[in-house]
Length: 158
Image 1: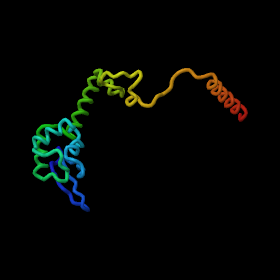
Image 2 (image 1 turned 180 degrees about the horizontal axis):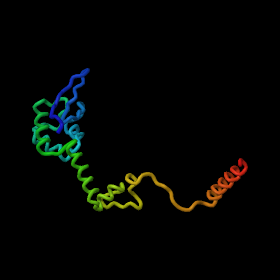
Image 3 (image 1 turned 45 degrees about the vertical axis):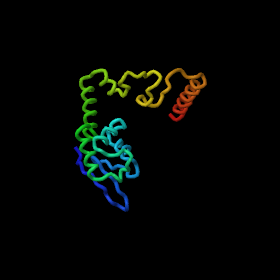
Image 4 (image 1 turned 90 degrees about the vertical axis):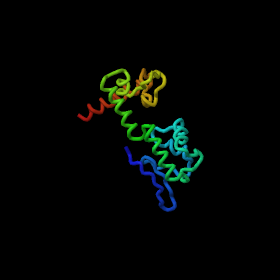
């Protein structure tokens, strides 16, 4: 786990609050700032702040050291966050790939895993469209013409 050091670093009048190795923006509210931690979303922020006894409307720079320690304790006790969560997710995907199940094969091929359609959508996973199919007469004639001109050039150079 990352060190649970929570500091207010003074650099040119800039106070940055740090929780679990992540710098939280000072001018934002603490509820928004906590969502920058991987594994903590809007659904979890309310319960974390309620258990720690911190008002969600306070700015990150106004949160005291003791409140930061309480927030950190609640997060470490109840949630998997940051590196540990990322490691768990990658291990799960690696396991699916190794056993060769359907979901693992979809991960290997870079296709949607959870049953989404791929005929008309899934552009994010499949990439840019590649047109496959018949050519128009003009395009086909142009390709043939370039082939013949290249062949003629080769014969004249020999």
